[in-house]
Length: 275
Image (cartoon, rainbow, N blue to C red; front, side):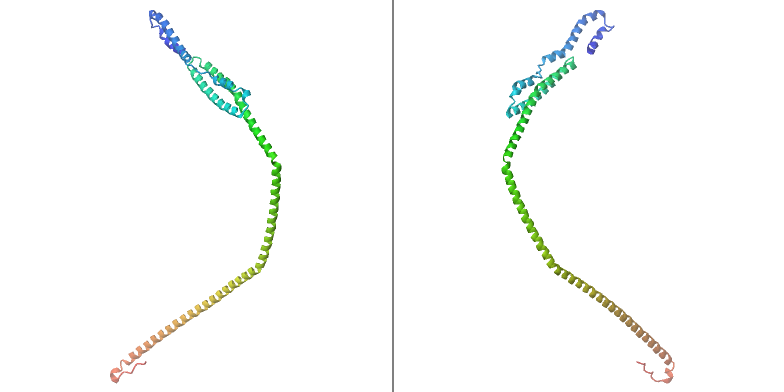
């Protein structure tokens, strides 16, 4: 409608001469009608596939009373998935076409209702096929349980025999374990004296080694003290000898000094020096 008002606006302008306004009105009105009807005509020209057709074909192909075998039920479920996909695809085409029409919302509501009805037609087949398959699986489990229950007496007897053999084996193992523990205890008691003896000998050796080490330490200390005393005595003797030498040297020098003035008068050879 806004587009029509825009087209008709120049025609109603006061600047347009009256003699030109009247001849253009019919032509412009026809053009407006053609433009408004264009999308509807275009949508009508497009052949859309019915949305409910896949559901109707599926319902005709699989009446509910025919879903009585695993093969038929599995095939029906596969066709149900295909039919749902086809309905969704056709519904998408319908909704796309609605946007080419003047009353878009009304068209979308119709397409939505067609999809709902198609899915409603498909749903019973889907539910019935799944229910049959679940019942078949339950029947198979019941049969397996019956077969298992039928073989239980022999299995129970075998289990009882195995349990008895296991108990005998366990009792024998317990008996052997007790005998082995007794033997180990006896051997332990037998070797306890030898172990204690070895421990005592080892401790005695350690004690003797400590005593020897202490004696050696005392001896080393005495030797060190004796060596230190010898060193001090030697140093004292060396000092005494040195002091004696110094004293002798002083005496000799004094004697030489005393005998020096009398040497020319005596004219005698000087006395020999003391050894």
